[in-house]
Length: 84
Image (cartoon, rainbow, N blue to C red; front, side, top):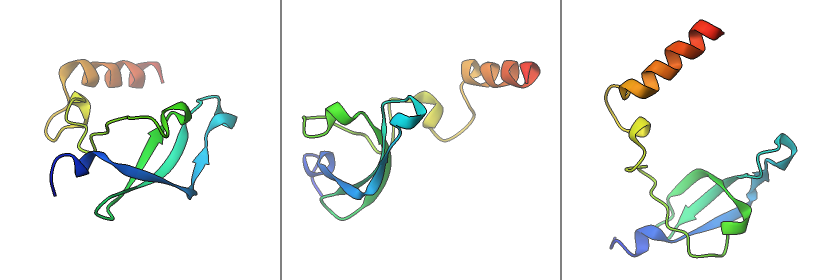
């Protein structure tokens, strides 16, 4: 599949739910890519229908990568445990 096709998907509204009752303003959505791959995503409803690029690998989110957690994330977890 080419890179352009990797960026387009359709929200399956029958398998999605609003999280507004939680005050988040997000939609817990099942999203179907052009090749049929399904992803579970948190979306902002105002972005649906607009040109929004998604990265299912979260390559720019350092705490979603394989391996050890970054030290700043690990520190926040430890602080949370101590406060807990």
